[in-house]
Length: 334
Image (cartoon, rainbow, N blue to C red):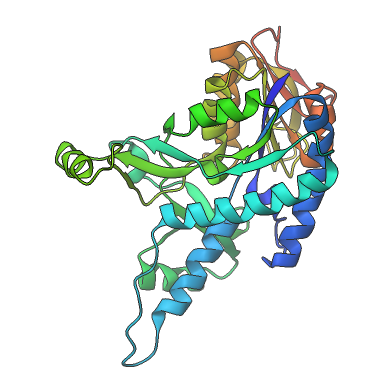
């Protein structure tokens, strides 16, 4: 089979864990061990989140650029550049780790991936994507919001920064990815949802062509949801399955309440009416929407589950499986 497997940012960096290089490497090794059996048996494309990592980079660079009295500091890099940095960092670590678990005849490549979005997307007005660490003290977030113009929302018990998360429209590197897959390469791509770019306006395109650049695109201040980007990528690459791995075992109805029940199996049609009420936009909502979109469009299966259960989730023994053929909404017993 051809599979696209998306690793959540929190699967690579656990909640409340220090954001250090050592912790990141340890978690990447754990992820590679879970993914290696899939890479040996199938054509595998790995994507990953970057919410914690890109938020940390933003904090670090603002700390550096703050400067002292009389100091002149360079401006902070925009989110598209920080997205490219995190995609390169995590892709590098994943490629190293997967190489350690796979035989030489299973080559691994990590590719920076641009993803085009629409400038008119309403996400630019209503940011929902969580990035960076959580803050228990709301007064800290108020100061950060005042200083940097950031927006914060509650994520569980903590407050986290939110940024625009427009829907992906086009995977720019799709032809290259297809060539590598056909040659048996295990791919790491579209990290953090890909690097968000816009097609430049007509005047800018003309200037780009005059300068010898044919594409005429510009980066944009946003973080694309990696689940939606992974679903589009899976459709583009004619994948048989889309697997969304995170730090929870299943999607649940009534999450966080005494009526919580895990979802074993469902069809996109059965889940569609439940999205707004049951699955928050900043967490499980994009996973459910992306899984349903892929299953509806292709007839393939989508699955949501825990990283350590990757093989069992692929085989339908664990996690939540979403496919058009599901006869009913099947829940875990009470």
